[in-house]
Image 1 (cartoon, helix red, strand yellow):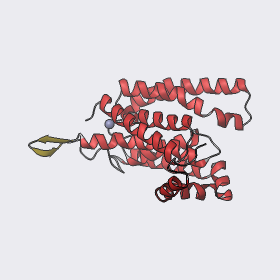
Image 2: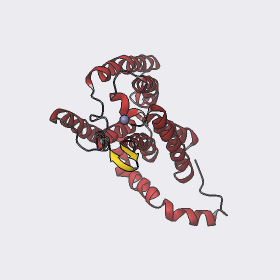
Image 3: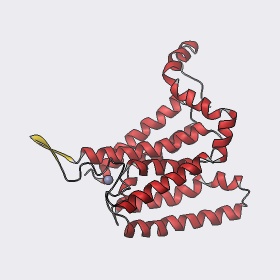
Image 4: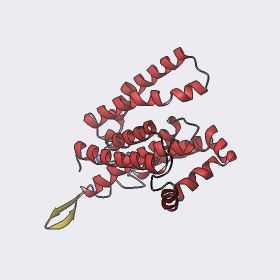
Length: 247
Ligand SMILES: [Zn+2]
């Protein structure tokens, strides 16, 4: 299995590319591009929070404890919370993640269980989408996509490292335990897919998604993504090769 350093290096390189592509092709602002790149980098460690006490769990929960309350500040403000309430809520979330979630993950997870799976990648992507509150759905999807890309890079690397090359390829026992839709045992599967369904519902009923559907912003965002390849040469020609304008 790939070690911590390999995962982090791969996801960081991917994150830099992802952030740069978002800035260049989607017109994402620099801070949003850096945030997406950083989340992609850190998400390269995310699946290994099921590996018990150790560096991945410590690093990830520390990072999440600091970043999650910060990402939720816009949402708290939208809810009309006072600055004092925002600080107190942020502190509570920090403690809950840093100690509560950390304790839970340490004691109640199995390595290469459902944290190493496609539904888990979708769950963390949806969590990032809900946390990254913004009026621009494209930017929220971009930030959430960073988490999914980093997460998937981990699963791919784990599978690559489960093939041993000693003259001929030999599959280790761990092969197929990272890139999977279903794990062993019925409860982990039910639990993972129940979370996925609840979060998918939460994303679809999110006020900004409803608003985006009504105003056509989501359709517009999808057109921006699907037409990037076609628009680029036209815009370059029109702008004398300087690329599209950025916000
Ligand atoms: Zn792993």
